[in-house]
Image 1 (cartoon, helix red, strand yellow):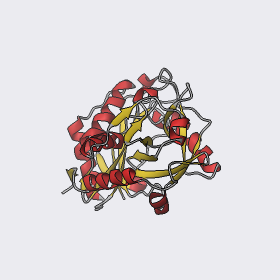
Image 2 (cartoon, rainbow, N blue to C red):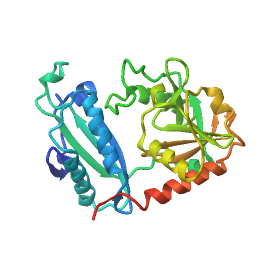
Image 3 (cartoon, rainbow, N blue to C red):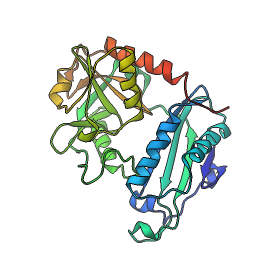
Image 4 (cartoon, rainbow, N blue to C red):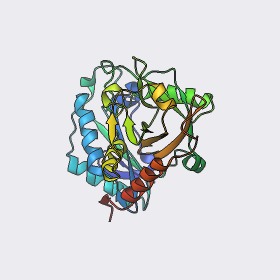
Length: 289
C-alpha cells in the first residue's frame, strides 16, 4: 500500500509520524473520510472544502491549496490501483514537543490512505440495523463544535463501545438537552407521513456530505424535507428510518431500544433513497484516470 505523507508517496511501512505529533498526543487535527466508485472520487471538492473549514475553525493554518489536496488525493488512489474504496485524509497540528500550546508546532502534517472498507455486514443492509440509545452524550457546541470533523473522537468511540456491548452495531447519541443529535458515526433520517425528517446541525449533528446528498435527492424524489429538533419518540413512531455516512453509505434501521420502527423492515421510501444514492455515487465524481 502506498501512503501519501507530507509531500510524497511512501510504502506503508515507511509512513511514520513523530511521537511528539499533536495529533497523537492531544487529538489535535482534522480529517475526512471519502469514497470512490468506478475510479471516480465522490464529492471530492465538497470533502476538501469541509476539511479546510474544519482546519480554519481550530486555527490550523494549512500550507496547501484545496486544489493541491484534491490532486494529492487523486494521486494516492491512482498509486494503489483501486477502482472502488475509501480514503482517509488526516491533517495533524504537527510535531511540537510535550507542551499543550499549538504554537509549539512548526508545521502541520498530512497523510492520505486509500484502501477498502466494509462498515457493516451485508445482512444489515438487507434487513436493517438494530440501534440502542447511548448514555454518552454529544458534546455541547460551546465545548466542541459539531461541524468540526476533528481527531478528538473519543466521545464517539465510547458511544460505539456502549452500542456493541449492548448487542447493537450503532447507537443514537443525544445532545445535552436530551434531543437526538446523530449516531456514533452516521447521520439519522426518518420517514413519517411521507416526509423526510432529520435533526438540525445545530442540535449536534455533523454536517455530513452524504447527509447533503440525501437532502438533494429528496428534491428529485419529490419527498418533502423537514429539518427540526427530534427526540426518541420521533424515532419510535416513525414509519421508516435510515442512517447515512461516507463509510456506511445509506443503511436502513429496523429498531431502536427494542421498539420496531414501522413494520421492522426496510421501507419503500428508504429503498428509493438507497437506489438513487447508489446510482449517483457510481456515476459521478472526480476521475482518477
